[in-house]
Length: 329
Ligand SMILES: NC(=O)C1=CN([C@@H]2O[C@H](COP(=O)(O)OP(=O)(O)OC[C@H]3O[C@@H](n4cnc5c(N)ncnc54)[C@H](OP(=O)(O)O)[C@@H]3O)[C@@H](O)[C@H]2O)C=CC1
Ligand SMILES: CCCCC/C=C\CC(=O)/C=C/C=C/C=C/[C@@H](O)CCCC(=O)O
Image (tube, rainbow, N blue to C red; front, side):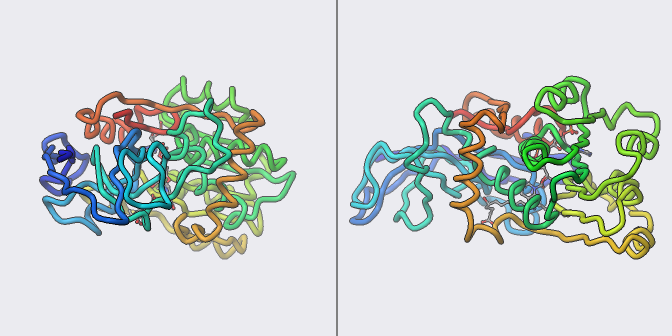
């Protein structure tokens, strides 16, 4: 009998999550039935969506939502061999049983040399978010100028590099000087620390005096309200996330945005990456190719041990991660 360790949401978050909001429990797993398989999580993901989704989708006592790269350790399902690796969406747990219907095998072309954790980041949901957000929502064209915030993170760092691959000028911001240095290292044309600039409006103008064709917004809030005034005519805004608001206890008051929307006839579209999952294979194939060609660089903020998962989640929300935040079990 295998016993899984799981993290449950003990108490709904109020403001920033606290470690006391989580509780680790043990879960005895039954013996496999025909068609089932037993898996162990090898890498787990912590992502910003877990903060707002926990309020919308979870009740206290539920296992925290999330995805993992898992290895098949026992199989009574002929379609899945022991030793194979999959991406699953089974939450914060060390082991789980599946009937195989909710598993995505890692591509057969995945080279041994490439960390399998990338299937949770650059070559996984965040990378696909950047891919579809840029190509299908922003519809960026060569020669355009792209702005992206949270640019040193799992999604933003891919947005900037894909925009460079697409022949665009890229401006990004992040919350530390070391992250800004990283952005310049991976090819951003302009990068700034939004926490230390004296005037965001002036900084955005200086970075691109003609304005921006595409704005990939991961942050929302005041940044977005200022940035929208720097959009070129017919500019496009991909509303990807609003992490500046996820931990608010009192909703922020957003200034008036209709004027630049109308005056510059802007397109602004919210999107959720799972709406593009019918083309997931296309995206993963493209991202994997660019990584292997060295055109798409990656960085992972790896936290060791399952027990440290809440701290890693809180740290990511506070900006302590460079690149994708990952837990190595
Ligand atoms: N629509 C969709 O389908 C998806 C949307 N998303 C969204 O994309 C965004 C980025 O996600 P992801 O790349 O996974 O996360 P990141 O790896 O970028 O980590 C979150 C980062 O957000 C930044 N941040 C945190 N609080 C604030 C704040 N108050 N103001 C500005 N920046 C802040 C921090 O970086 P910094 O140092 O820059 O402050 C932190 O490192 C999130 O909003 C997320 O919800 C992600 C996946 C799918
Ligand atoms: C202040 C309100 C903010 C609303 C937008 C919140 C988050 C946007 C975002 O980050 C979306 C992420 C989507 C992630 C999808 C992950 C999938 O791997 C599975 C997620 C769970 C599920 O839908 O089954």
